[in-house]
Image (cartoon, rainbow, N blue to C red; front, side):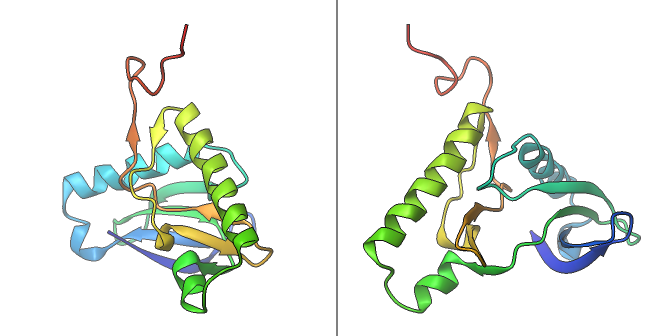
Length: 149
């Protein structure tokens, strides 16, 4: 649904990743709403293993955009193409992704699309969960939000 570009935040003078709604989806109200819902879901999450949202708005061509932290590195898909990781790397990956998802669940957000292409390995080896486009907000009545007695 989106295209990601390297861009410059002119107000804060820093590079960012800019996600724009794809042109073929720009006229679809449901796609526009889902795109903005993604931005709101991720903006509610402050965690070292979740990509940070800096801004949301509308581009000059009318397409909505999400400005987020610039992530240098590669997706887990790209990393796996180079060969099988060591067991210690697999464990570290699992721990970091689990921490990110636990933080999201604590805020009532379920990602619903975890896959290697939605996990980014930063240049310093940290994992970041991306693409909350299919995320679902749970209601207060949802079982995932209830605490055990």
